[in-house]
Image (cartoon, rainbow, N blue to C red):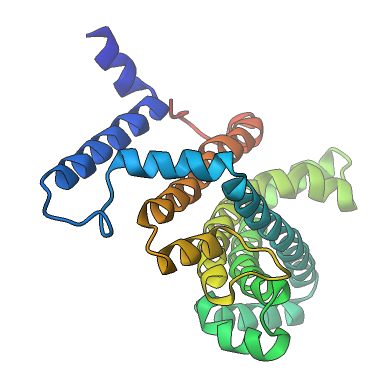
Length: 267
């Protein structure tokens, strides 16, 4: 059948099909009446809550503040990771230092730093940023250093034979060769920080009179407004899907696929 063939060959349609199945199962379980609306609301209640929170502007404000925090943390974490990675590539001694601190801090969950963040910065934006930067910097350093060290001598020699030296060699040969690792590091850092952000906002609450999606979830749970909790969860999931399948996918298309580093492109 043409429709079935189109679904099976298109990645987005396949994902939409699986999501539709999950929603159908959800609605079926709710329709049995075995669970209270406070525990498992129906899809219509969740949709109504989502539309209401969007129309009042609450969902937009919470989402914008969460994205502001994640963007700021990504900028800080990426900058620190770039500096540490560059120093590690220039100095074997500093490379051992970076490897040591990465080994120490990378396995440490961001939420484990919550008591330290509270002691150092109190309840506020800086505490959340500390958790987010911690979640971002270590996967990025690990993947970037691995990527740069995986650049073959042959590629470097070809670049030098073409007259490339210094920063030109780095930007034209080393960065493109290591970019699949770097992009993977950004994907891991994004997912880690997005999860940590929601958890941190639930604990720290509103900072500076503002709060993100995590704080919205905490508020609605406190007042037993379960459909609004699931509406916020839906927005969190939707943002994650869009970042992965739109932003990262487009970056991959413009770089890795364009450079011929992927043998078979997934539809």
